[in-house]
Image (cartoon, rainbow, N blue to C red; front, side, top):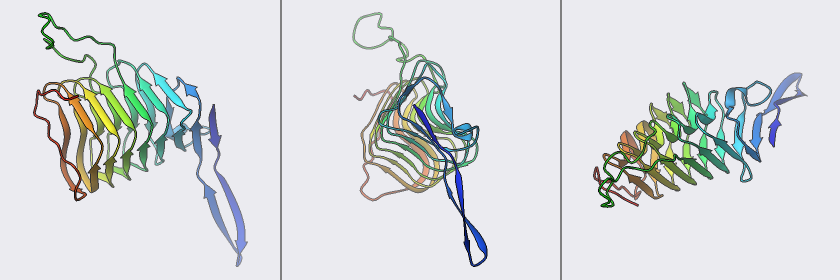
Amino acid sequence: MLRTLRSTTFLVPISLMLLPSAAAAQLTIDEDTTLPVRTATAVSGGPADIEVTEDGSITLSGGTAITMDSDNDVTNDGDIALGGANGATGIEATGTRSGTISNSGSIVVSENFVPENDDDNSIVDGPIAKASDRAGIRVRGPFTGDIDNSGSISVEGLDSAGIRVDDTLTGSLASAGTIKVIGDNSVGIRAGDVTGDVTVDGAISVIGEGARDRHHRRHRRRAGAEQRHFPAGQLYQ
């Protein structure tokens, strides 16, 4: 079911002063649903954190499963699955936002597409995916907070990404989980400027012409973190 925890305020008189203490609102998804959710309207039409528990799932044919359009936290411990539509995304932050995005569950953005192989030589003769501009986690604007993937992200699509940060990240980016992306000109992790640490301890697999495991402009990397660069056009599984 979709459970909500409404905001409450407790007023306690101390030295003739009223000191408020508020509990943050939260939407908890602990069963299967086919409805997308947004942080800005998550609880009674107002902003709230969103958590998908281990028992919860969101399944859509396209669009975005969880939109972070307010300054809240998004946590996925369950399963997010999307179909073959262009632009399909598991978790997406829009505008200028602050909060945290955490995935310890599964995000799968898949499609039903069979690449052409006219000469039956086990090498495809055209694109290896059809849909495009897809992502497991995507941040479109300036973001203050941390992004963490300790689960699994799988994306099929051209010009797509497992994790994509389009603007400045004032915080840290970490992936100890797995990321697999299939699609030409796609990337495992793409980020702009990152002020904090970028830590990649998990496996990244990318398949497709022009595909890369990581692409970023500037960051501070934790000492000892593995770095791998996949040559364009080479296949990795």
